[in-house]
Length: 302
Image (cartoon, rainbow, N blue to C red; front, side):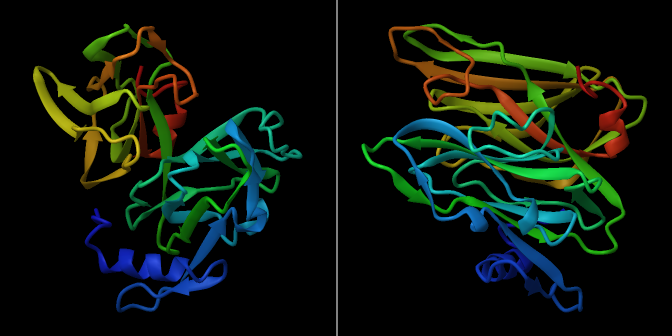
């Protein structure tokens, strides 16, 4: 598993991404050109009105390939809280996100996030048939009194032809939170058990909370043994990270995952779950394979 922060490829990617759609990437010493797509460029610059809102854009036309190996968020931290990529059935997509309907979440990233780097023999499949549409979702918070221009989006690098396995995204956590007023170190724990009849291989984890979050971790329990997978302490809402594991982790049927979120709430009111920044979340977005295990059940971990 690559550590994108130290890989020469990561440097080449960041340099090549700036060239925009249609640029090619030569991987290290071998001749293996990869395409780079800039999702969001065709709807940039866009005006973001004052206040907090979520906006959606159909970016299907900007995609030059159907399988990705690297995804890098490109966000203005003073304006964009998160970016998501959805695969949905083809339909006119309105900017207010009300016309998406049922969709599959492919990627979620935040300001300051590291790129998601898929293993060499895997790919994140973006489209499955001709009716699929890719939707770029941006959560904006414009704290000024005037509209602001924004060019946020995603940069994607195509997967090599040799990538024969599909990777998928699953979310650990639920929308049940109750953080009492004037508390420090309040803990919320979300637990699930691997229910598939085959091992699930975990490749990357992206923990997610809002401004009251101070620490977050994901732990695997096998039998009586606990093994930390990801721990972020202190948690920085402006530097949320997608952690590509140095070694892929096998989750066996019966293994338990514990997501632990810690909050400080100095306010005089309780805080519950919600999508607004004044609300809170406790989620871990995990990228895993084989894709069949994630699809076998309504939840491979519950």
